[in-house]
Image 1 (cartoon, one colour):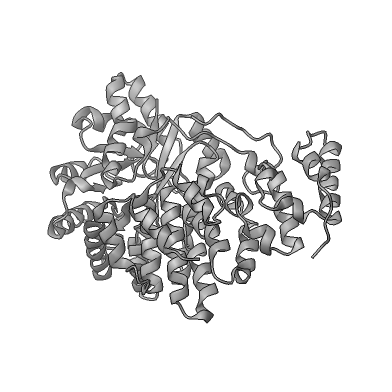
Image 2 (cartoon, rainbow over the protein chains, first blue to last red; image 1 turned 30 degrees about the vertical axis):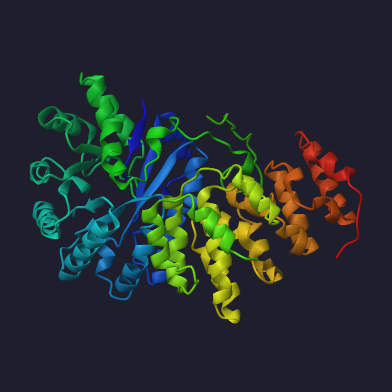
Length: 296
Length: 223
């Protein structure tokens, strides 16, 4: 089964993760731009980060047969930092043009401040102009109110809610999100956010329409195999293969294909792996036998 | 190099919508700002696509452009834009402008910058950029400078050229694809290639067949 993890921060992960993900059936990922755990002090470090998302990280993923896409945006936390926020906004129109950028994101609310609101609205407008979908982060604190405010901002922007995925939902927010016409993403996490069993219960109750799951794995305690693990939990719970495939593949593909930049539908299941380039003096392989697969 | 035929060749293959989009950003007269050029250069990736040039490459070869058989439509468009635009910029800004385009490009954009280098005015100015590109670990970008590209043999000093050849051996690229390699073989390159073969044998690994090819070439003089 082909799996698409539409929210995973691979820049923070190892090659072991890539190998495990490929072995578990993950053939495509979206890496949203986000914050790096500590505040950036220069606009230039944002630009280099965006460049790694469309450059080196994409190449690294390809070495494991995984299609890498990204979303570009000013994240909500750093929207509060006046020394970088305006400068990052100036970079966005160019980076949103990059061919592997499939959405504006992750944007939205963290502390729900006036600065966050202003930059959230400005980026919704950029998404409309660039004809790109939007991936929205919802806050950890005061979450339900954050989701309400998110949906109000989406409505006010005039953007079609079918082009918006509101992420990190839980039992308390899923109805708000689905009722708005937006897509409802769920991050399956060890400890916080959602877990596999609760996700199975949500799918039983709400079905699969406009519902997605992702690992949201990053530099914290998280697990890039949470999507395949949740799919396995769905199977154990007796959910049908059609339901599983919709969650694993069809839904995230349908959402991001609106960008017209996903090339997955016309290609073989995963990229042909050619690691020969990397068998010496390189940061991916360290003297192992390179894996080479025939081009498909 | 006259860029007009390149741009015409490119524009014949894109939609009316995309022609308008391009003309808005970068008029044929070439008076675009660096920001406009950058936006057009990036946006061509999605608009011009990945279809290889095929027979059109022969027309480019007739103009002395090597390697166009492996270019896709976006690369042709980007090369045409850059060749036309660069001479409109102040002389003392041109090297930095090309470097910016390279550094801020995704890897397909970087490929197009490298494919353009030999066609730009006063190409020797771009040696530092070509040397930097020769150190990349991204396979497609490295191949764009190393293979079917006239620039390295024409302009790179021995040190950089030899490193490029060694790296091509390391990553398994066919060294027959290095344009002008036979004329750049020196005693030093023979020694480096021989050492590499010894290292592989000592580690119990196979020796790339291309090493014999390079060793079979006669030495020229160092420069």
